Image (cartoon, rainbow over all chains, first blue to last red; front, side, top):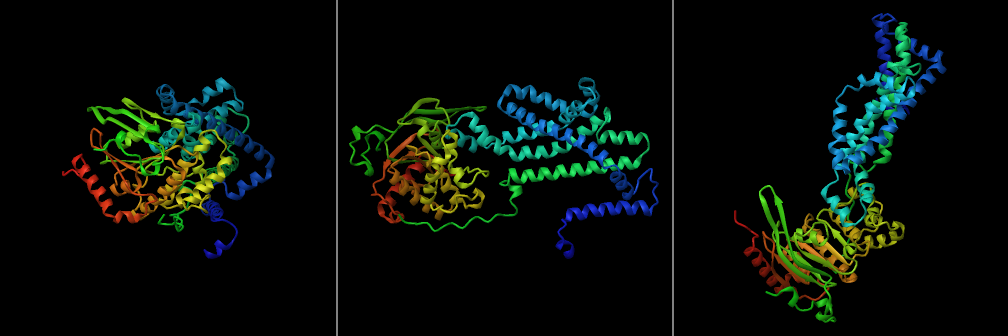
Length: 269
Length: 274
């Protein structure tokens, strides 16, 4: 274990390599037919022999995912601010959003195809539809969690309501918003794939669906592997974003920070 | 019963005749009634008090007696149900508030926390940086400017909160049991620091506390507030020369003041026997 730690390769990568090894070993050991589960080597061969194809398909899915995510964050935080500031919107819009959130959103995918066609728009819309709730709900929670003390502080400093939002409410809500963003990131990917499942001529979801029709299990696995790669990369991107945006949050500080030693102060005037 | 309007000029203002002085804070028949499901609760009776520029006034009373409510009404954080408060000078823009808890925000460094009011008032924080550094240095926080709040002890955090209240050079400094959460030694230290700062800057200070010795040590006048509804029981002049050292607490006169105040508190709702 110590020898492993000394190598410049992080433990996370070793874990993934071990996972692939178990996969390969299981396939060889139990003689699983390739049409059910192909070996790792077969899947890698498939990807390596069509690099351009998989690159284009991956980028297609990735760009739709990121577009849906970014729009979700922008609209989600905007909606949350509106909901927190307007009692009317809280009673109306928030109720509608919560009700909508309880509809299995995958069931709405065909509707988006009817409304927006089979292009990128319906995939992005699907991604937003699935991921925006996570942002709105967490952002509303975060924006509301300004303590009475902080509200008093803000009011005692006599700034505008906008200052209160920008300087206190939003930064205070940032940990919640980022928690919502982490969930929304993976949900955006789900949305993009669902959109591609319903109707598409490109993207990894389309690759999976068309390969399945031809029993090209190796292609299905290749696409899944790439999806896993994209999802993992996006997850770590969010982790990085979190460490940049909220280095001050409890969860980011490590364990029990020591209070600094008080400097000597004159005890007598 | 020495009442506010008839009290002698305080030691720091002896050169100014009382008649020539206009109160910095005029509290005129202020009352506060809260409406809850159990009916109306009178938190504050009719309270009148004039506070003069440069005075250090403590509001002393049992917890829940409405002294914090009065402070919050003066600060404009709550509305009075009856009566009104008049602030001279810059009014509500010219006050700094120190809360019981420091309310430093974790996403800002100590110096940026101190500069928060500047930011709030649409002024340029850069122009106040040097001043913030000086203030922090006055309170022994030199070298901690770029630390985060969680890296500081409770006393240091409260010192930073005081710096924040002072950064925009307020005329009035309102403090709501600012040292209530600190240990006794830190509290003593901060009392001395607060006194010397107040002396240097000649601010008008209104200080809420339930510590008798803190009130006597710091104040020109101690205003005793009774329990439910809060009313002014007595305004006691504290006649010690400034600057005061912690040693005055050993003087017989300090003991007399304390005993007198404790007696008043006992009569008016504190130390209830359940």
